[in-house]
Image (cartoon, rainbow, N blue to C red; front, side, top):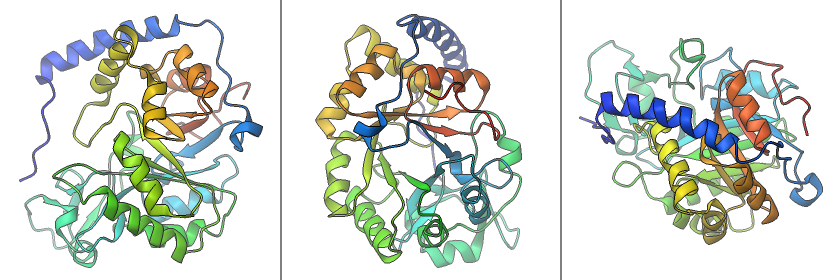
Length: 329
């Protein structure tokens, strides 16, 4: 059986998270009354702001599905796609939000009950012979985006579609977790192989959860030009983002845990997290250090406004089509 790590007693966590988020939103918003601009595009060699579809879905297809990738890349209102990557037992990169197959996310084709398994313990062909899956979306739109089951897509399949849209950004969120997934070196080797075999010319971002993994991924990519993003804070499947983000914001605000230090110590090109973690001054310091700021959990008008005001350079969003920062600085 797969067990998820308990971070906090559920009832206490729910109450504490609600209080923390309300208080921190006011506190961090009050750090600066003026919106932060994105990093200068000439310096960053990037559009002024990238909007990426969470799980590649623009809202009318299941997350991390081939149908979502094909549909979203044809649209003009998204700059690219964000997809989640887990390595199967034969090291094949698959699109999956969680590192396990469970009845919460998947079902057997034959309808039989099954015990949860780690994706890293089963070969990719066997996974797709036995299971079809869907994965949870953000806080809103989840029912819309997870209503259909589908086979697990390989990264090679995803890239074979994306390469036909070379101006679109590909953002790979690597799900790496001790004791649950294969290690970072294996991810790096397989990602490099997939990108080069498909002759990808798209802009590519690759996200890892821990500081020590940034240089390892960069080393694995050799001369492939990809930007590496660091999760801030590190987060793993089964944990509560609101609570983790709120605690990271407290550490940043009260204990001088500097997001800029995290980016510089790791040599990351991007720092990405929920905007609640970042004060305006933290984002401004990141930009002064030529580090991009990215954010996700953008699933309603309020979170979009927060991302815009914080100067997010990359917005991974569940927001319906047409909702962007106004004006888009």
